[in-house]
Length: 505
Image 1 (cartoon, one colour):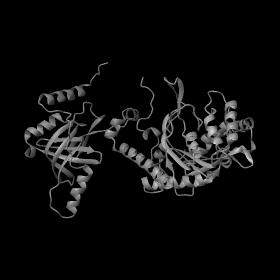
Image 2 (tube, rainbow, N blue to C red; image 1 turned 90 degrees about the vertical axis):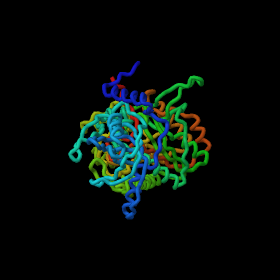
Image 3 (cartoon, helix red, strand yellow; image 1 turned 180 degrees about the vertical axis):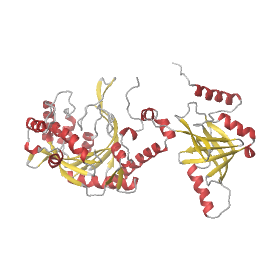
Image 4 (tube, helix red, strand yellow; image 1 turned 30 degrees about the vertical axis):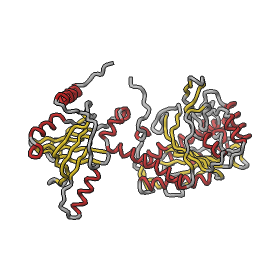
């Protein structure tokens, strides 16, 4: 299907053709850059500060972000990966023909190479006085929503993009015109780097486990299914790294972690995307109390590295990440915020009756664990703004977790909540192969085939456990949610470069 061009695109295409007719390649194979923008500004400022009256010559490259023509002079701003700088074109420097050529053929969004000498304008802006320039890449499609802005009494063109739907679908344009968005993804990279640095310093080994798995497991979620034609075998995109990482504990790798993509065939909202980034680690000879302490230490370390403080602001609320965090038993939290004592209602039927007495409408088919999960999401989670570790969860929604001694219905599991979001989920991991097999059988028996809580039997994982698995603590955290928190971003789509979106109608 032939692409239809807008009138503006047709004008730019014609300019492209005219350049080629003049023997000028609008997409040359080579460019010559002497400095990054940030570096040349620092060099110029350094010589000014030192009182050295030395010229700074530079060849800069970048995308044109603003244009302002004033007869015999033209101002432009270009932007590279390190920052923005002003260009100054003057007929006395480059000739009237070359100035008119620039004004006619160069548009917002084009990539340019410009050479000259740095100077400071009367308004104090560090600027490149252009002596030569060339086109590096002609932008056929204008950057979104070009607008005029009055600067020093002159009209300056800028490109902006604010509509979220357009920004997510055209992230390349979003990044091109919104420096704040670029900052978010630089912060995201710094967060992942800091997580790695922290875990490496604690003796953890980073590994990679299969994304395509013959049996899914390690979490309560519906998987995506695909098919391998040659093997004639259905495979699943992983919903968790857990069962493969814990196999490595059997292989005597005592501390192991992975940062990578998980895929869950679930709903999309402000904190969920079908494809997302997880950090999971497993630590031999540790229990959930030791993992709690490591969690506090790790997240506060990342805040130090990325934000520069353990006190952050999230959507207008000041949050203090300094350990120790508040610890709250799940039953106590639900009693406080939902007004229901789950320890007094040990069956699904009795808990549902207690919920109906509070004018709630529980799912009549839900297990006790699922009813408790609904209370957590509706009453507990939204009220936990400051970092809070909620611990001791029902067994029937935690099939891979050790039971508390003397309490078969409760397991050693915790979740950490910050700013009304679940940040992580962690356990004292089950390492008894006989108990694990019974749990798999129980989950398969008590849940329907399409139930997200159903865990399929993984015979190979049971075989691995039977060789002997050390006691261990496990941890899983959504990197996207941590990025939301540390960049003060309210929607997960803002911190994923290419979030999943419904197909345009």
